[in-house]
Length: 134
Image 1 (cartoon, rainbow, N blue to C red):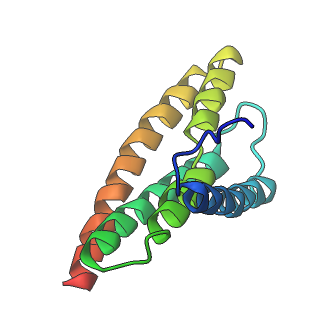
Image 2 (cartoon, one colour):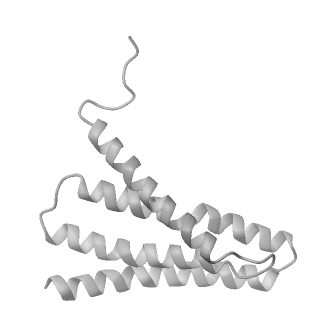
C-alpha cells in the first residue's frame, strides 16, 4: 500500500486549503468575467483582486494573531481563499502579454501600480485591523 504524501494528521488541513482555494478561485473567475480586459488594456480585474486580496491578508494576519481562532481558519482563509483569489501568476502573464503586444507603458504602469498598491493595501489592512482589534 502506498504511503500518503501528507504528514499524519494533515489531511484536514489539506482539505481545508483545497476548499478555500475553490471559493477564492471561483470569486476571482467571477471578477474576471465581470471585468474583461480588452487587448492592450490595463488588466483591472487582476489588479483589483490582487490589491483587495492583499488588503484582506493584512487584516487576516492581525486578526488571527490577536484572537484565538479555529486551527483551520487561517489555512482556509489565508492559504485557500486568499491564495485562490489573488493571482500573481496572472499578473506576470498579463504584463508579459502587454510587453509582447508592444504596450510597454501600460505594462510598466501595471507592474509598478500592482506592486505598490498590493504592498500598500496589505499594510493598510494591518493598520486598520490593529485599530479595530485594539
